[in-house]
Length: 200
Image (tube, rainbow, N blue to C red; front, side, top):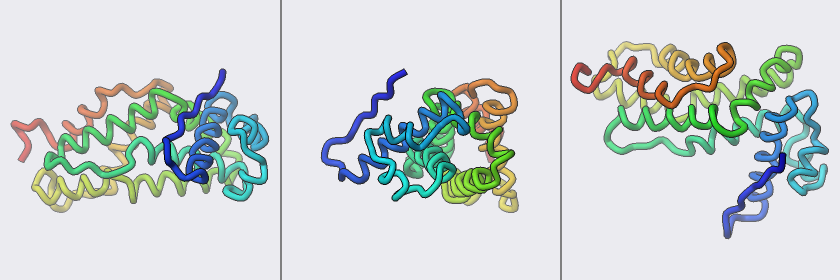
C-alpha cells in the first residue's frame, strides 16, 4: 500500500522532511508493527537517508514515539477558544477520536502497545508522549476554564477527569479493540458538564 505525503508550499525544507519521515513512520508502524518496522524502511519510504533519520532520532523507539506525538499534535495543534467551553471540549475530543479511528494513528498505537511491555525504552518513550498530551495538551486548560466558569466543582480533580475523559477513547481502541465513535465526544462532554439545560 503506497503512502502519499502532501507538502505545504513554502514550508521550510527541514520541517517538510521531518513531517514526511514521521508520517511514513506512523504508516509503517500501523502496517507492520514496531518489531517489523525498520528505520531503513522508513528512510526508503520518506526518500531520506538513514543518516538523516539518526540525526533527528537516535533510535527506533525514539522515532516511533515521535511519530505518535506528531500525529497527536496534528490532531489538535492549538487550544480552541470560541467562548463556548462545552463546544471547545467537544471539538478537541472529536479531533482526537477522529485521528484514532481514521488513518494510521489508532493502528500504530495498537501496534506499539504490546511491544512496549517488553521494550523498556519504548515504554518510557510512550509514557513521555502520553504525559505530554495529558499535561500540556488542550484538554487541561479547557477543563480549568470549565471549572472557573462554574461548570465543574471548584475542588474537582482535574487529573482524574483527564484520565477518565482521555482514557475512554483509548480504552475502546486498545482494550475493546473497536474504533471509538465520533459520538463519544459529545457523550463524554455531557457526562462532564451535563446538558446545557441542567449544567450549573
